Length: 278
Image (cartoon, rainbow, N blue to C red; front, side, top):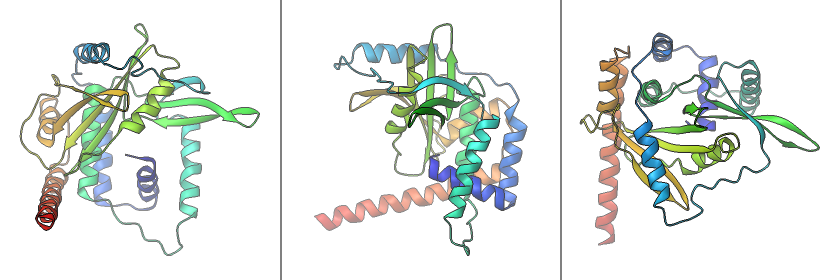
C-alpha cells in the first residue's frame, strides 16, 4: 500500500468506525502475536544469488547508498514513528475540503490488507519493518522513515530480505521503484539485500503453489534484479487454514466476487479495443 493510500486509510480509520474496520482490527489483533510455521527462505536466497551471478550486467544490484546514515529497523509502534505519522496525517487532513465525506474502504481493499498480514506471517521474521535513517536537512540531519511490507534479516550473515506485497484483480501492479529505494538504504548496513515482490491475484481461487515452498521467478528491470513470487487468493487462504489463522470469510468471499467482476470488465475492455483496431 503506497503512501497516499496509507494516509487515506489512517485518516479514515481515525475518523470513522465501521463494521468492516472492526473485522479487520479483530483479524490483526487475534493473529498478530501467534507463532506460525515460517517459510524456509534459504532456497529463495540461493536462487537470488544464482540469478545475480548469471546476470549479464556486472553492475546489477550494486546499490549507491547516497547520503543516508544511521540506518536502523524499528517497529510500527515506535513512539517517534507514531509522532511522525501523526504529523503527516494532520497535514493531509488539513488539505481536504470541510465538507469532505470519506468513503468506507471496499471489501477488496480490506481483503488485500488481510492477505498482506497472512503473507507477512509466513515470510516475515520480526516486527521491526520500518526503516529509520538520517538524511541531510540543511546543515544537519533529520530522521526519515520508510515502511516495508516484509523485513527478514539475518545479522550473522549480514543478509536482509525486503518484500513488497501487491494484491490485484486484473493488472499486475509494479513495485520496482519502491523496492529499489528500500534496497539502496538497507545496503548501507547489510552486505546482501534480497528484494522480493509477492503478488496475490484476488480474482483466482485456483491452487497454484504452496506458500511454504514457493517457486520464485527472477525479474530484471533496468538493471535491478528482484524475485517475484506469485500467489492466488486460494494459495493464501490455504496457508491461513493450515496455520489456523482467524479471518473474516465473508469479506474475503465478497472481495473475490468484486475482483472477478473487475477482471472480467478489464478483459472485455481489452477485447473491445482490439476489435476497434482491426
